[in-house]
Image (tube, rainbow, N blue to C red; front, top):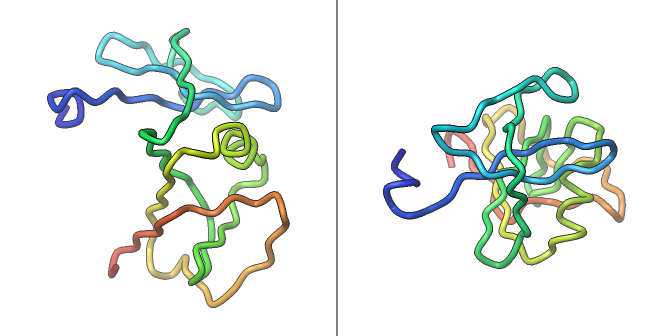
Length: 118
């Protein structure tokens, strides 16, 4: 509610085939089971990511250089390839941060990783 009272919009991910987009979410938006049985917004308003967009990226493991291992679908990598001006952040526990992880050229890493001690 704080974000909305500050005039910010909330967008939630929705997977369509091999692509993911973010759709507008508010108190009137229903959440329905989507791919992987994850609840997704029943909305048709699509976000076109820009330099005033903050994307919260999920991940299983992060390196001290902010590299990340996601959950294997590549959805965030493809979205951020399409909208490279988006700002990114990840939130994790300390135990999810390791010295280094293998990365591929197409892997997108968050600008900032915040853990429970950082």
